[in-house]
Structure formats: structure tokens, C-alpha cells
Length: 373
Ligand SMILES: Cc1ncc(COP(=O)(O)O)c(C=O)c1O
Image (cartoon, rainbow, N blue to C red; front, side, top):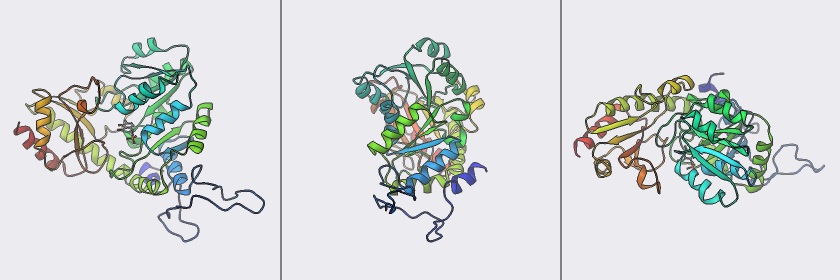
């Protein structure tokens, strides 16, 4: 089936008790045990499994073409659980421009637990090869990345990781499975902040790890999920699933608007540069075209005149809100350098999550704000 159909139907038919087309929310934390001591209906306790979570996990597995999914309470704890599944002394390679929050998890929490992470430019394959060590167990990529929109060649980095017996984890939050299928390109795990495009309405926090196949790391991760319980609530699963049904049509609307807005910004005299994988001027546009079927809704741009001009510009916006996060229906803008401590993100960079309002209205708002500075 096509992704538009899978996003609505996979993992659920109708409620067997009532015929409801939309699943009920199963708030019960505990489930009846059979007289013989078995659990023939598969549910025991909501920390280890819940019907709403099973539906979400099953649908994400289908969309990413994976083996199984573990849903988590946030994108950050999804990645954190992968790190917890490693062993003290393991070495990790991660992108130099990895989402800031996850970088903090690696440096401020897991370094003290004996996991060493080296941050490298994943767009330079020689650098990646040279940074691999005998104890490198994990290579993490995020493509396109947040907020520099760098694109990594998934297949090429998968080959480097596998030649060294390391797993490749790909954060697929920005492109979503609508535009990119990392497991088909050699990644062993996909990570999502379902908080973003998958839930899609800025109203639910969540994360997920999708495995390509059964393996030792996956088994440990499952134990961490079920025993630890950093899982989304049944209501959050239900909201994420509701968002997921329209992901394919929303993703296309986001991407169409983002390309139109990127062209507008690229031709504006007060804009120094635009970072968007769909632009021919993007440094890795050829790789993006090879591995993506669309370029998503997130872009960054550099304002002429430095940080003050960039920040001033955002104060003149009306429709586009100054807010963190991305992937919702509303357009939002953020000065990333001021929220990323000690960052190398340029001071005049603004990250724009292009929403699904009409592109004429988004452009009109940007135009008047740029005119005002
Ligand atoms: C690419 C990427 N991955 C993961 C995360 C973390 O997700 P969450 O905020 O749900 O913890 C973010 C958050 O912005 C992100 O941008």
C-alpha cells in the first residue's frame, strides 16, 4: 500500500468490541490475567505495553519499513535509551551539528558513564572514516540536520559503520518517512521526535526508535523501554496517531511552502544565505536528491548585519511566531544561537519552520519584517 493509506490504516482496523473506526483511549494501567495464569490478550501492565502504544508502534514500523518500534515519551529519551543500551567504554561518532539537546545528553550525562563521543563533520566521509575506532559501537547521523540543514550520505556512512561492526542510527525527524527511508539505505535504527511533524500540531511530546531487524542492541533497548517506562501516555499516543493520519499530505504542503519561501529569501537583499536541502545552491543538494523524495518544511537563513538585525527582524513578524520546536501547522521562527550554549551556529541564523498556512501570507509577513530592519 502507499504511505497515504498506511498512515491511516496500518496497525488498526476497527475496535473489536464496538466497531469504532477511531481507537478508544485505553487509560487502564492494568489488564486481567487468565484463570490459568496466562495473558492471552497480550496486555499486562501499561508500562510494558498498552493498546494505544502498540497501535502507534505498529504504524511507525510500517511507515519506516522496519522490524519493530519502541515509542518513548520524547525524542530525547528515545536517543537516550539507545545510549543506555551501550556498554561503558563504548565509543560513539556523532555529527558536529547534532540537535543541541542530544549533544548535551552525550556530553553532560553519558560522558560520566564512560561513553566517549566524538563529534565530526558527517558530510566529510574521510573525516568519518578517520574518526572510527576499534571500540566504535554507534554512529549517529541527523539528516537534514537541525539547524544547519546539513545533509549526510546515509548509504556511505552506513557502509563505514558496518565495515567497523558499528550500528548506524539515523534521526529522521526532519524529513519524516514521507521523504526519506533510512532503513532502506542501510541504517540499523531510525529515531524520531514524534513531537514534530509526526504528531504535527504542537500538542504532544513523543519519540520513537524503529529497528531494521532483531539484534542485541534492540533487545536491550526494549528492556530499557519496558522496565524504565519513559513511554508516551495513552492519550499522547492517540494524539500522535491522529496527527500521523495526515502526515503524508501535511509533509507535502510543508515542503511545497518551504521551497517557495526559500526561493523568496534567497533573492532578498537583506538575506546573506538560505540553508534548505531543496535549493540547488545547497552544498549537498545532489546527495539530498539521491536519498530524499522531498526536502521537508524546515529551513534556516542568515540575515545581513549580524545577530541584532536577525533578532530585530523577528520582532516585526505577526503571523510567524517566535517559538521553539518545529513541525506544527503554524509557522515558527527561532534564533538558535541564543538557546544553544557554546554553539557554532552563526549568530545571524534564524531557523524557520514553514507551516501550512498559504505561502503568500508567510512571504508577506517575512517581507514586511525584513523591510522594517
Ligand atoms: C532533530 C531532532 N531530534 C530530536 C529532538 C528531541 O525531541 P524532543 O524535543 O521530543 O525531546 C529534536 C528536538 O528539537 C530534534 O530537533
